[in-house]
Length: 317
Length: 307
Image 1 (tube, rainbow over the protein chains, first blue to last red):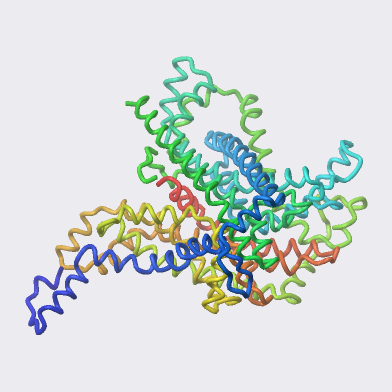
Image 2 (tube, rainbow over the protein chains, first blue to last red; image 1 turned 60 degrees about the vertical axis):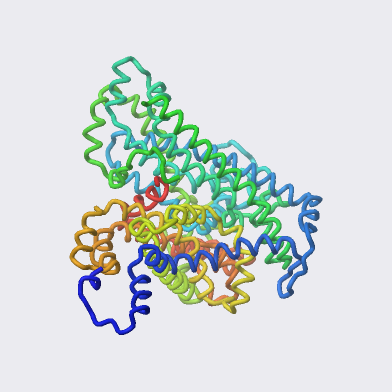
């Protein structure tokens, strides 16, 4: 805008006008500012997303350009019991892990919100599992759940509760429990600390007033904490569900989908089919099959959010 | 998602909040000490112990001599009296570990800087230039945040291969920003919104260009936000696994998480010591960074969620 105030010799009127417009017009300026971010997101996010869906309709393999084969990949998957097993595993993994993460995370947030010594240090320590790379902590779990030298088996044996080592990652049920536990372990700090941030916005005077009116601790939680926290809960749980559903690294580091595909998630199965077996088309079909589930999860939380907002408006105003 | 009815979260108060302590003391006299022991300290101790035990186990395993690792009957597995640095020595001098550490750091720093620059520009344009369709673009960027890498890695692998980036760190440097940009743009938008508009108007009247406003007024005021975004992006890069696993092939090019999973897991029964040493050494840089910037870290985490 500075240039406008200073009169200058303008040899080429039209060119200058274009230049000024590109430089000062709000929309053009906005466009220039967006270029780097948009370039990344279009070339490496939007384009691959479309490409992935296209690949799922072809028979592409590694090193060979594919032909369009219609819905053949999907028909193939429809009759593939391993695929359905992986869908089941993913749904089980997501529901169980998210529900427990939410319960434990909320409980931990309530505990951390209490007044106690070393509060700041405790809160900082709680978040550590979230900081450490998932794969590396998954390796620690792999060692903790080792079939021969597991510290859990050792402790239980010495307590006299079991006679034999538990084959944690070799037994289908135990393997599922173990990966779900590891996922919960990693997810709880995130849920707890974000909910804690929400809890701290709740004014203590509300609790004081309710307590004076004779509310119990449970009523305090149910009718003050929970309603005020719902918006944050909705967002946190959307993220939690989304990232649990598409989890890959934890499974890959701990079980690689074994034993007998009992812990194969859709993401690990698509990696195995696409990269290891080389069937890019089929792998792409598996990962495209995740999209409806993800959309459903987003929609549910979105409409849940809207409804709660409406409810809150009704209740509060 | 922008118009959540969430009350403004006081970010700094999350980890250390002297003001909050005063407030909550009002009702704490209602609880007796034994009651607090059972309802507060006991469950809290259990949860914290469970959360931290894997790290203790990782650290202990990495300094235990091999014979103690596998002989659980003669030695108490929970402690060792003769720690050894053999595993770390093996890691540092007999493997590519320093290489991997350097690769991870190099990729993480480059990708983070690229994404922060792109997101600063984008966030400023969305929040302050408010060009036509800015809100729509903001929403699209939020949607981009919800697209997980596990859906993208297969088509991205073909793209990376086409561009001839396969097995080069550049493949990761260019693809990681897709994860980082949506997140940090969203975070920085929140920070830029808190900067008073009047400051910019003054500068505009004084004849500053948009670029000058951004670099001389907005950025210095948004430094806490920039630090948060930087640390969080760095951590995300360090953490990333599936792209690194898919796009890199040669042993010396790998990043720490991928290399440990692929190169250290052999049939050797004595691998546990060096495996855990590798996991510990790969986590320490992040934990140290975290220790210095706890508040920024938490504000990044909650900031991305609250908007």
